[in-house]
Image (cartoon, rainbow, N blue to C red; front, top):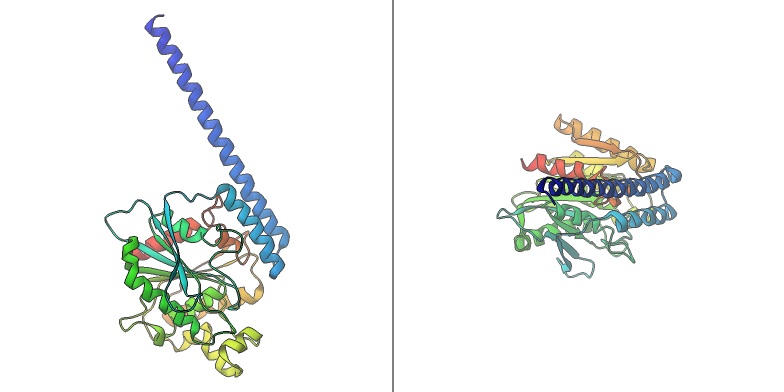
Length: 329
């Protein structure tokens, strides 16, 4: 066989292999897009509601999306490390397997649950909310997934106290996981956002040298007062006292350093969440004569935006990375 024929056959084989690879990639991408569309359509069909049934339905949609499209490679997890004496005062640490010579930023995530329920991992699956610290670890950031004590066992200021406990543990231990204790971000969803915001704007909970964080990510946070059993149990029966202790009240009296904040809500968040988020945004704008970063993620509800992180739905995750990078650099 002549060398020209061999070269011709090799070229054809290479072309075919390239076409097969492109087709496989296209089919995989199409399948991912279909999976994302299924989850999004499910959220849209539920609409602007929030209750236990919606939480269960949303979890089912995004557990499946994470199962099919989530990437957990290159991440090392250390589970249930105690930061305090209570059984709920624990964190999971997710670190990149491949570490650089430079210490990595750290994001501490605090789950929601109306202050009375919830966990850093949803029952019967390790996919949510571990998807969040996994995503950060895959992108060179140490992710910490945290639990905290729940109402009615505890009262104010247990939330800020537990956040302070998490941050104390981070200061003392995170370097051994490759994290930089001087580049720590807090992230909280719903009631977790309430606790994070309470910590940020409650100077008595801070360290002697300041808050110990360089930025915060507040996801569909619960900032308002009210008369629910949980709020009365946590803050007390006096309505005027409650108004002053919730995050919207703490912002007005806070006199500490300004902390960069990225806050967001969702298209299908309940009004009782979105309206106080808007009030918090306006108060921060007025307080600092400069507004924090804010967005409303379309096609998502109260938890689907954070459940989508580290899946084929890339609406949220890359935006969070960009914020973290903007603060550090």
